[in-house]
Length: 334
Image (cartoon, rainbow, N blue to C red):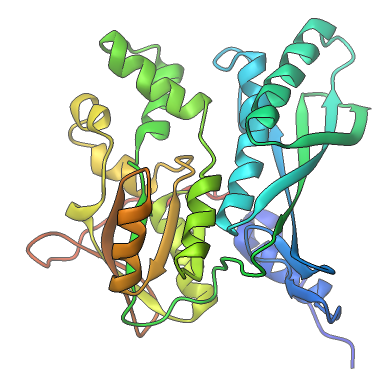
């Protein structure tokens, strides 16, 4: 019997994640070698001697960047970085990339070269080779990158393995990228060190490739990268794992420069600002301790996985903490 789908709504009514769920149901997953299909940071399937990974992301003028606030080398570098972060969230090693460029016909070749050099410089840092792509005409600049990677360890991180009793933890500090974006848009100035730190966090995210590999090595099974916001992305984990999460907001590691410059909103930026591209993961307390000892970046426990549904936030007194918005979602018109 053919499945029945409701197509009589607009994407703005269905929402980004509702649309993803619909397309995942339509696509199915009949390949016996397929491990992870639509709905995680990357697809995964069994190769001959390793798990193969593939992810795709788009970077569109007017949605993800504007040339007025983001120099062309940074556009290229960030477009690649967000794709690399998806491979990091699976605990994999990036290998190859395919880059599709859509450009207005009056685009300066010098700008395209600068954009591409931004990608090439970052690719070199991570041992990645750009092996092909496509070029087409469009009314605005749009970049679509497909990353191919692998996990020689035959183990990967997924969104669907969290279990009640596990600790929720995060790499690094949060809120800097969202704060940096606000600074770029508003032309507000801070002291030079803080100004540079926050703007760089937005323009030059660091994919946590080494940390993703470390998580796999230490026995972590569940992770996601923080692209849409800590609460929004944790919501993806609890939904996929059919569990709930309890987060103590005072334990969330906020970037110090954000606390100084955005004191009243610092926690909000850390919880829902997004684009930090840190790794959010769950594991037993013992495994988290092992990760903390082995990692070269801060690892901060912020809560626990519980039976139930959704993400609950509490302050240090145990009172519910209200957040205006969980994070970024395409087609969200609120």
